[in-house]
Length: 565
Image 1 (spheres, rainbow, N blue to C red):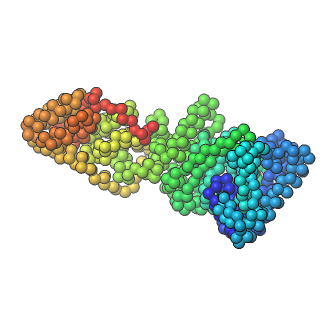
Image 2 (image 1 turned 30 degrees about the vertical axis):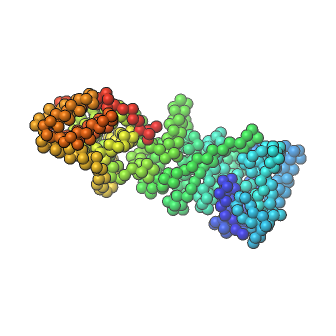
């Protein structure tokens, strides 16, 4: 009966480490011989002087390992009464018994008892009862059994696998919590255990240093450690892991503690879109991948302590947003510079935030045009200072300047999607800053390759375009009428301006009621802005150039982009 992933995080972590130590290529290929090989390696590592702290200042077995397996054979003080050799003998005996039960379960074609972890029928004689000292986070204390809860019965293979989980565990940082990545993939999980578990332990033993879990991420926070691990896997095993990342295997990082003071666990799902983003960025440009990791996820030592703490907070904030698949471009704008590089942010917007390629290409073109505009400095300054509710007014000025068309404005900020304002502002500034940087260093701006037509406008936008065309064609005094609409400060003034058009026959009653719906002040201001956009575009010669657009008091709303929170 072959081994397979169980879905239980700690058991699967042990299976990954067992597979890495055994030399088998996949779990289903593991034989009794492979179990012998893996057990010998586990015994060699955990019974080494470097693990037990013999002749060293720190004992991995008594300190760090006790956070995973409290009161185990290597931790229990009574086992140390006969010194290191007594501990080694105790551990070897227990490991030998686990190995025998595992082999019995592996050889049996069919058993008479169902294992609640792997779901297989195994021989009942091979089951063993485990408590928190050998199965992390089980309910109940180690030495006491509240409510007569003794533990849980596991088959021999699952019980043996748990012993190996130590080689899949990592630290968030040098003194951070323990964590591991639950990824039911033979290649990914075994590679993590091989490189950061077994390989790390072997390097410490060779240097005669105390054992500890790997935690040299040079980043900040739980999310930072997770992302740095995913990046390092791509750096080291890109050819093997790319296809795995593309398949979107469900991945969850578990941050935990299991010491005697009480258990703690936090599951952090890693969205499939993040894996897609990382492998897409790596394939697009290795240099861009390096820049993204270096500028957004790394905390370099040797800085001033205050600067290092500030950088750590920034990295932790960015990493948390990435793991939650939230927009990061706004948080990456620092002192008129885009950290992480435009290529990475462009791919992130596509893969993670789901931004339409045509809209993204339009934002690139608009940002570059803004950077090149003769009044660019003033317009960029307005955009930098603009809260989400004022972004539409800034873009409306871009329509008046001929940078955008009415339909393009509606594509960037659809009338029925006010929450998109913040991300549009952030992306435009990101393009502007990156374009300016490229000009300064003599590089080409990495534009999105290909041509895309903007999405077809909805019925509301088409109707506004038609109303604007009718007004341009039939209004008797277009310039003054447009100026009055631009400078209206109250909804009543907007309504009065429309009534003049209605009296002159330039606007129908149906269109009047559409533009100023009863009881909806916000919508009246929104529709006014988009109507002005088409008036600016279709009747450019009638647009007054010396009048500033007024955002009336009633038109200012408290809409804040949920994407920016």
